[in-house]
Length: 285
Image (tube, rainbow, N blue to C red):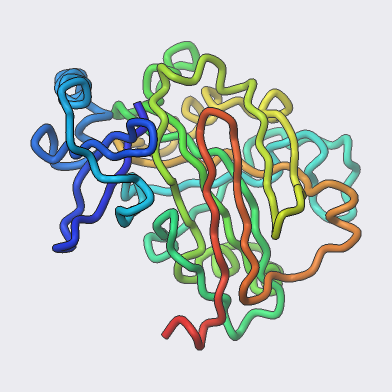
């Protein structure tokens, strides 16, 4: 299933399933998407609702919120082969996952514009695949980690490079408002045969700037669930964004900071596309 959170004309957030180019309302089945992900009974009722649905609004016509609102949003740095810190050996790989947090104010819907901070001279984009927790995970053994992954979605880890470089901690550079567009939907794990065999592409204004397979991740998705759950308990709906590859050499050669009007698309076959448009902070008021 592909699960979304859609917003009614009255402003109510309701779970839904994407069926072709339409949305099946699942509000009568569950209060939210997390309930469907976390409970096999709710999932079965959702599938029955989809099978019996008739009139469904067009996906293009409904407003979309982030598919889930995670209590914890964790992100990874340098988790693809060849993606290393400036000046480091491209063949170097980290011994442990490089983990940082995005705060709740960063969350944005899949169609929300992202304001570029006036105080930042260099805002950048990072297209990523994010996994969504479906079962409470506490000190999970590696061989059981996959059981806790409910599905996969896309995230743009928007980053202010100048604020990120002001200290040894990345927090401020990663946590401006709306710096984590998420969506457009969650593809449930049963529809992703091998999450370590997905091609992640990022397109900026029509040009592919990133193209690399998840087969080249340093730490596979199951390892991340296992590793992080040794420290903190992961709850249903929590999100782990699994990192971005290095930009292609041609893209690096002409790279410039994001500017108002730029559009960035994160694309993964089977998981969909997440397109984010950037606007000036003044225009967003």
